Length: 398
Image 1 (spheres, one colour):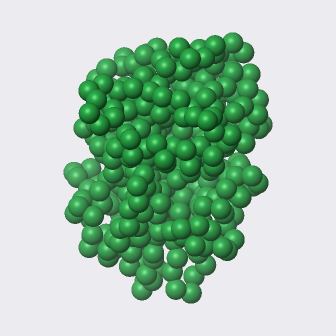
Image 2: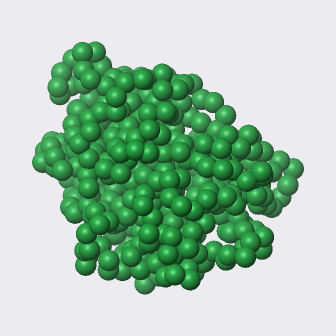
Image 3: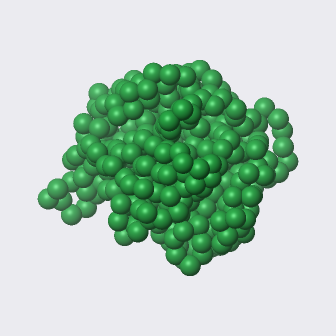
């Protein structure tokens, strides 16, 4: 599966990407892997795929390469933010409505008019939400995102390190006692991702700890010339998901396939999920997943998450840290192994005590270099991780 470098012209990457029903299912599976345990639950992503298939003709399911952004276009990052547990398959299309309310408010308040979208991250919800919003409202959607995986902080998104500001930044949702969603600009305007994180988390309880988010408006010229960007990840994950879905019915075949992909996969563990310790905070789902490794044998693996899986530790083994992805596949439903995550209510999903495959995924090289690498170190240094060591391993994908 090719994963493309932005510096090298590539005809396949630069072609328009039009997604069939099967492509959408492949994309969901790939995003379930790339999300590193977050980015919104797999089942919520399935609800978005179902809505896209029902409401959007395949000819309208187009992802545009960044290379085709026009100078006079104006794109913004649109998605959801907050605790994954606050978003469900039943309410996810409401968050699409919130994004539209935010776009309309932005267009009323500002001279630049949003006519294109870029996804937040490569997760089942925050990638597909931008597609659903754009495709149902005639808004262009680009195949790029801020991290190539899902992340717990706006500071971990590549958008934060380009030459366009994060503000104006809008949140949208339904406030207690109100019947209809409203959008409001976060004021005073945040200076960067770190400033926005603090201001957003202060405002999230007003919207029930999750809201629609709109920010990082940028011209087509700025998007094309972004120094920091993960380009082409959606189609790369569609291809990865297509291959994985062919072998998901057999754990032996799936493990063999993953082990045959050293270009993408750093390590694979066949395990049993022993327990989950949860410690949620407002706006976050925090906790620890505890696995007993079967192959290799007799190793207790502990994955700590803050919405997303960020670090895995085991006795006498080096820690595995973000930006590397930590995906988890569980036998679930009639189709075989499924990449569930922390947004899928794992404590009540019937997976504790059963088998699981834990996959360490290599991520895009832009995440392993400054300033993105520093942003991951800062997250890991703080609660709930308290890790002050090196980011590792450091093999990455161009």
